Image (cartoon, rainbow, N blue to C red):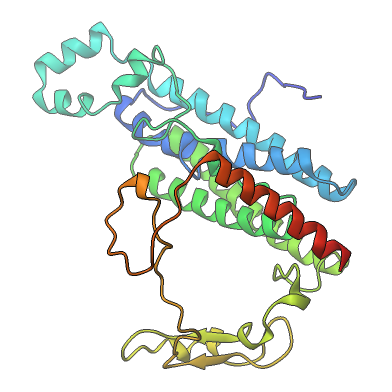
Length: 305
């Protein structure tokens, strides 16, 4: 159950409308790393979290805070778009060619689609997409994604802040920068907490770690001519997960003689083919059904062995 307070978390009052800047501000609302993304990412992670108590509560708290950040930005956008387009704006444009060029840069969808209000889109009018969010159910992997999301969000907010001189807008964005700074710490400390509580052994996602090929979990492969990449810490010194020290393969070679050729094509698909691998298998529903039966039989046999 959610409750809504009629007050914003922080004030969102521009000194004056600015339709052109409103288009830019849309990026940190509905862009890939905008507030809509982190809001939905954290809420989804919270709803699907299977660890009751401080972890689930923390994720839900920040997700709820991000709802408030979306509300702040949409309010700011609506106020920046006040009077655009309007009769007074049209008169000013008619008398000032420079102003006409500036006003001509506004996002027309703000007027045509949003009726002078904000939109769930980025600065180029691309609709917000749910594929932006990460919610895997694995808290370590998700917290890593959250650190990156907050870093990108803060970077873009900082860049947008440099595109306006409006003191009211800057004041709100300074608040947003501060929250993004804290939230990066929150997720990094959350990873430390996961380690301390024994949910993970270290800060590296290593599901099925006992089955991975241990010959290749500590080597850096360098492919550049005259590359200096092997000088970095990632290519030498102790591994973060124990085991052999990190190593650098300065001249790596292929570990197989396998070549990347697809199988012979279905003749009904009319793919250009030289016949060197023999005839292709015609694709049909019967073939797919037979393959399905073969897979089932194999699974049963594997289970019995």
